Length: 441
Image (cartoon, rainbow, N blue to C red):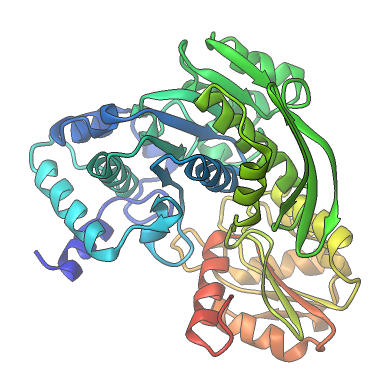
């Protein structure tokens, strides 16, 4: 089977991220780990060959995984990292020491998973296949540790098969209510499923009521944000933030983090605590400084163009949209802003547009994410008008790449274009820039 065929085989599977082949919520069977357990079992249980750091939470998971992996690699470890979803290519999800998997290697792994699938009673999903491929690759590489991001929730997520020694929770906010329930408590209860009795729990969520849900899982040790680790101070710096972090065993002033947004300081603190919890010792301050200085997080408050400035952010829930709006107020000029927004059907358009500050935008360009789950942009446009955006300042452009092109053309050089609402929109916009003459640096 050639590369094109194996990728077509992968894409033919049920994919809850895109909605391809997924049944309606009310028609789904009971959640199960049976398929991923069967699949990894047929592959020889590769996840048993190395320890893992397992990361859940509503927002910040990918950034925490990337920073944690960078810290551990700087400490001399061979580190695998698994994140989701991808922005442009599925290879982005699997990385070793910061480098994504080569396409040929992924094709080979997918071929192995396809052979294993033949022994299953029920075919796995797209996410289960990619998860299994990642776990197999990490075993092939002989990694010292895998840092693994949960796809959705925790209790029933395919990544729960990993053998973790550190369980990480970034935060808990309202998102994916169709799967995880309508309250922060129900969402926390599902995410708490990654916490085992032998784990060190690195708890970034500070709400006492929610913290108790995670503590009830009986972890072996607990590190709490703002108690055992956290941010002593942070301030704006050139192209990022200057941080002062602390952990149970270390104090780290004057760290430059080249990421935008005050929330990234909390992500860095969670990541540093996660790395030290795994190692069982503090890291040298110069090592931490070097690792953080090289961190990137594509599609998360990422500046990819100038005159006008183009800012990509995968904010896809209200908490993320509010963090984006706060970062824009604190870190970027108060200049005319064109919002390019596309949402999935599960999102309430009025809430998202309000959190993004649509009423204050000079222009709102709405588009359709490249997903079967996309919300009709006409519905999004109507919501913008409901919030007080004049009809003349709202434009419907179906294709995200064309929406970005139009937004750039209608925004003055001293203005800004902000692309948000869905990682699918951000990925499509980013890919269009890569295809042009001014690709992201």
